[in-house]
Length: 323
Image (tube, rainbow, N blue to C red; front, side, top):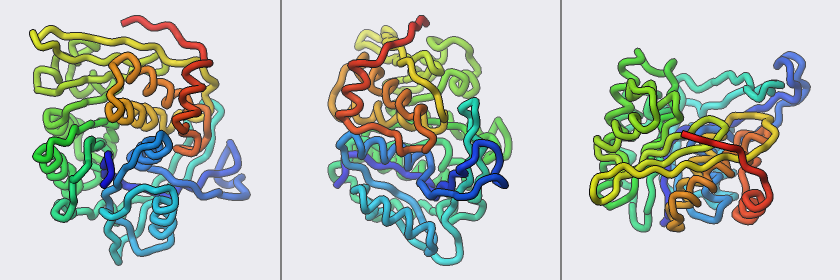
């Protein structure tokens, strides 16, 4: 079985060849998208095995995604296919400021109809880390229940649970509902990984150390806060209860497309945990993968191999950071 497991909604990504509007695009090259899918590719490229849990429609998009996953070695044994619901896809157009325009076609998708019973047949043998996000959790009440069930079962098998909140407010009935649901999942996780603004939103606190205490006091073992493009910080408790922190700067790169940066960061955290890296080198790797990702227009095609990552870390200048 795989070392890592994730659950989410993979989508076909049609990227316009124009940096202005869809109307001006002459071609729409097909790639893959979805936050958890990006993480799966990142983990795979760094030389580790990962299994994907989801539901795909019996359509060309589902066929394309499944063929792609099987072709690169992502475990698809926990993927269902269904009739009567499409596989989601998205249209993306580049932007000069690095923030692309994206239109989603995912309402009523097969993935959104995933139910908790999909967990019944999952074999956790060999799985060390479960990665979940707030995106798939937000699609429908049944996907939230599915993620919760998967997390609970994973913990019964001593699997480390990593939770990236990755909030999508438009998918929730209210901000209060999103905050409550997110914090319930955070309390079940071993590693909670918000951006600074996300941590502020979900905790109601402003300073990184206060946000960390909020979640450490819930029982989270590691709180990793992404500090934008300047770096990241990891908090955990020592045996005597003292809060410890590790702050590491990011790298200087030319930003082309910011989509997937957090997903790349997550893949770096996951593979670092698998390899037993210390906190400083964990953040260094995570920052590096995130920095590499923003230099590519694709959501995941720029994610590095282990060899590419090693060279980037060795030869790319760092930024300055203080907490």
